Image (cartoon, rainbow, N blue to C red; front, side, top):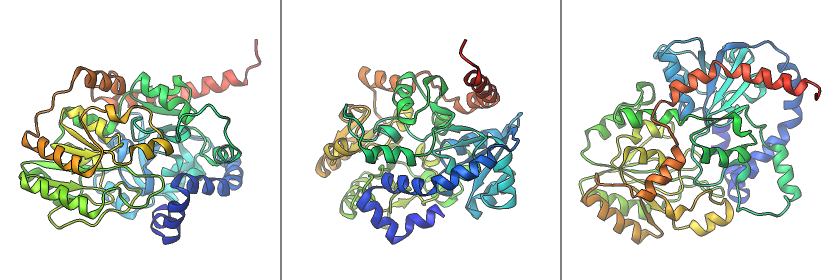
Amino acid sequence: MLSMLRSARVVRLLVRRLGVHRVTWLLGLVQLPLLALVGLVVGRLPRDRTLVAMGSPLDRFADNAAYLYVQLSEHPSGVQPVWISGSRDVVRRLRAHGFRAERRWSPGGIVTSVRAGSFVYSSYRSDINQWLAPGAVTVSLWHGLPIKRVEGGVGPATSERPTWTKRLAQVGREAPPDFLLSSSEFVTDCFSPAFGVPPERCLELGYPRCDHLLSDPAHPPAALTWHEDVLATLVGADLVVGLFLTWRDERVDDAVDPGLLARILDTCTGHGALLAYKAHYNVAATATPPECVILPDDADLHAYLGLCDVLITDYSSVALDFLLTNRPVVYFMPDVEHYAATRGFAVDPLALPGYVTLDAEALITTLESVLEAPRRWTPTPADSLFLQQMWGDYRGHASQELLARLESIHGVIEVSDELRASPAS
């Protein structure tokens, strides 16, 4: 449903005019009364602590939830993971691996959603089924570290009281999760107020999608690399440059235009490098020459990220993930002032580890220089300090540590509920 809406012309026009956050909030406001009514019924149903429903945005099999799901499915424990998606292809593919998966509104999907003791998702409850979530313990694994501001923190920092429109938008926003994945104390300090989750409910464990980047970047989980032709092409290349930009709230098209993309491709080709390109799933991809390797819309970016030798990005936290491999990042930030004035930043984007460029000419010149010695990048002491601030003690074991937490979070919720229900002493 959401995938079809996203591709509709009228929705794309609304996003251009209003921004995707406002469109999402408006949808949330319209649904709110009925969601509350359904929640009164669903929230009273008994749930199975061992059953975990999982999902990712727009019916994709991707991001932190997908990597954790594979870990749970391949290493049986006291937790039973079931992937929920509206995509027939995703469900069929996961079942072919011997994993449990159900379509969202199929009988099996409905039963799983109303019985699951936990909802573990990459972004929001709607990744699984927002209507059937009440009563389940909710765990958001989110999908990015705080370079840009997210959720309740979107917008430049201000001490002014929120306007009535911002208050209305907050009403339409999905309720905070019970637990939120983090990676360090700094990230928790950014995410806790933005998501409305107390710091003690932020799990500073790192990201499952990055586990393989620290252990074996060239061999991600097989269930996430089902585009075998793309995988074979990247594996067979001597040098790969990845072009992966984030999205802009007011845009429905990617931030790189065809002319610049062609220049990037020419620069890569001139140095014997293959260019891999993928647009953010919230925007339409730019038209590309046939020499460019396009990662399909439904591909998980991190499954192919470890096959890149150089990354071109902007304000996307994929940069901080890629830096775990000690490989160079080139940032393209021509709209940094506008971005700061509209969405806002949690850190200084000009101080990110790597090579920052502010216009097309600087991007091409810097890329030329990096491709002369693409595998030579040594972080400065300031770079190392920044990465420590973002990643804390993460060493590539987020999935295993999350499993241990999933087996105990129900007790945390029950104790918390009892404390809230007890009269003050």
